[in-house]
Length: 178
Image (cartoon, helix red, strand yellow):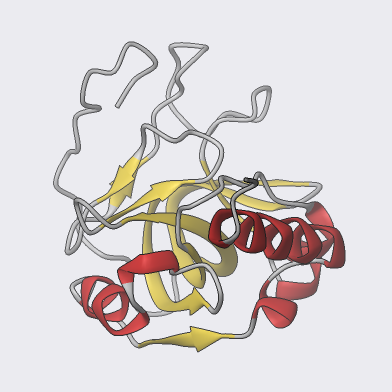
């Protein structure tokens, strides 16, 4: 969806031929109500099962990705760099870590790649972020993407500061102040 809340049109695209594009790491937030993953930084952007996502520049009105902008679908080249880069946290939403293929027009930047098209390659539900939704139910929702799914311990999925914040949020939601 665009900033006004309207759906962003998804154009049908073909998956990249073998050997084309890049595979990197990223985070998603899982929306338990819809079963769709959403972007962590652009929360209105949803990833639909079975459909590659096409990048749209939400601020510049030009084709994405663009070298002079931060637009495009982001992927870090390795997991360590993703953990070091940081994370926007949303209390109460399940967090997903995974590998993603990006292809089409691809721009290299300081944090990895920004691609024109993307689709998950594998997904891991971050343990301790499922809340009341239940791990098995959320894994079943992730399985709709048609890629391998599993779980990953919180300490392996996020950096130290993000892990501490997520742990605190989980404890706070279970033990509300009286």
